[in-house]
Image 1: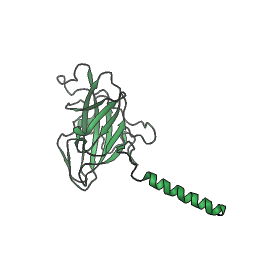
Image 2: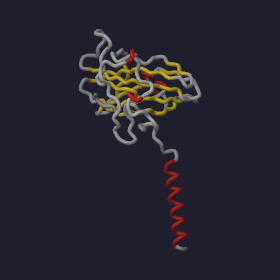
Image 3: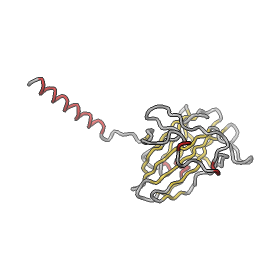
Image 4: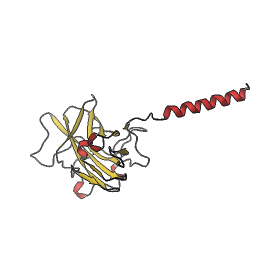
Length: 207
C-alpha cells in the first residue's frame, strides 16, 4: 500500500469517527446563547416600559465567557408537546429584589431574587403554561429553589396562566425566595411547567 493511499484511509476513518461521536450526543441543558442575543438589557428591543422601570439597579449584561448564557441572552427551547418552541430571554436580574409594598416581605432569614423573563412563541402550536412553575434558581452549594408568589418594586410579575399564539410574546418578573447567605449562581427555565426535556440555564450573580 502506498503512503498516499494509507493517508487517505486514515483521514476517512477519522471523519467517520467524528460523525458517529456527535450524533445523538447533545445535552438536555442548554447554556449557549443564540447567535445575535442581546449582550445587555439596555440593548433589548423589549426594554421595560415606564411601569416596569426598576427602582433598584438590576444586573445587566456582562458576558461570563464564550458559550455561557447570562443576562440579556436568549436560549431556544422546545416544550413538552409537539409544535411547542420558545425563545426565552433573561432580560434582567435582581439580587436582592425589593417588595412592591411594606406588607409582603421575605420570610425571616430569607431574601428575594428576581428574573425578568421574555418569552416568544417561535413554534407552530399555541403555548400554554404557568411560567413561574418553569423557573428554578440554584446556589453555589447546588441547592435549588422554586419560584414564589410575590410582587416586587421593579415591575409587573409574569402571568401565572399564560397562553401564547405563534409569534406572541410575554414579559414579566419571576421571584424566588432564598436564604440570606446563599450565593445564587444560576437560573434555569424548563418549559411546560418543568415537564419538557430541554432546560435553559443562565449564569447570574449578586448585583
